[in-house]
Length: 300
Length: 261
Image 1: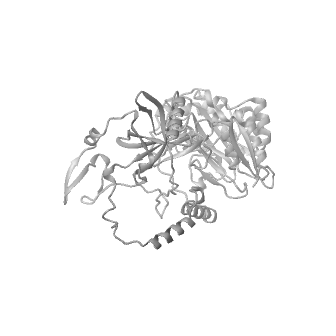
Image 2 (image 1 turned 60 degrees about the vertical axis):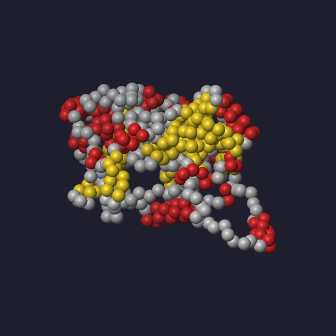
Image 3 (image 1 turned 90 degrees about the horizontal axis):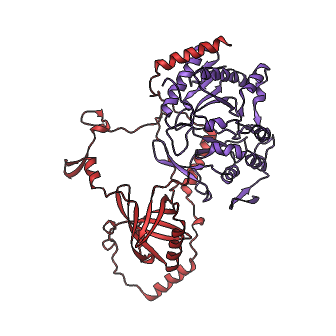
């Protein structure tokens, strides 16, 4: 096993097997993954900060079964920060990725996917955002997801709510409504998002389902409102995905979604790691509002 | 957020007070399993059951009973127990400094780390340094989660460890178990010394791993790969009813959306 040592902020990190290609046959080595996280860190870290992260690790690359890791590995370096989180049973110690060195350490574990809850560890009952996970069923894809996302944006806007959109990096889109107040609870976001999903399904029955069952989803977009739960995690914005190509869950501007949908080329909404850093450096963090915009859900 | 502490307060003795946080120092590595229903893979929950009435008993109908004789109980409420708890305290009060070698490891219960809290870094370093140089450990009293513990505060490799100790009355005597009456011949003793000397080594805990955990996790990962996973059915949601106002407002917004499309 080859090792390279890097020193960041006085902390020593051993990076192993940098030449190993984790996206075979597309070709994206661990060195490239580290390069990606280093480049995207300034945009990504504020979103990861103080969130109990779950790793999906691909030690043998994206062609092999990954494994989930919730518990922060016991062999973590001493400087990795953690938070104890309780969901019903015993508390579990999660890693927090609050700095570049921890992000690179996660990359070194082949933790390609970083999944985070909607709430920060210090305030587990109040989500920072409400989310609509637009998940295309069999026979549907990004085009249908984009169509649903745009209707959703307008519907929410009519309720006085700003929403933002990102690719999931898989087949779907995530629409987020920033909250950033400590009075909106998961119970609120669940009630609200379920009502929204129901109204979407009622008015667009051929395009939308609010039901989890697989057979209900065929050729439709499943609006997964149940993600608005303290125990659920979502792929973090700017995280890589373990697919055949190094796609990233990347924020989009709404006009881009509209443009691509009109021109019938929604597939090119996907953003790869190579593009992601360049785009983020050009536009800044398009998800800034998810961190700072304060909104309250009306009529609750 | 920094490492979440279990407790925070101060170590104190004489005129010294050092702000610290207590964090856990061991993870047992026990593999946790959930119990599922074989038929539908629902997560099972535990309920309290009254065999007399054949019904499930809600928490407000449960009370503790101390069995003082056969089928005879003294009832004790949670409030009564709570009133006996020691007062919550914010200090680890060091009573004496002792030589750790005098402490039989049988007294060791559970280890924690003490980490310096804001403003305590320097005093903490000083205590670490001096306790290490003088080879002394602090013997202290400390209240955690409504129990008072006797603890040892130990300096080890630049950090303070806190180990809760069993009380003397909790330690069972071995005199009844081991009688010391055999006659030992000198050549037997020499032979044993030779055997032990041959096996002498430095203590290196990295040589030993929890193999059962590794084997269980290997089995789980292999089964996940070969047989896939099962999913628990979604539970009926218990969220609040949707306010009619919200539905009306959504309908209104939706009609505007449809106008413009």
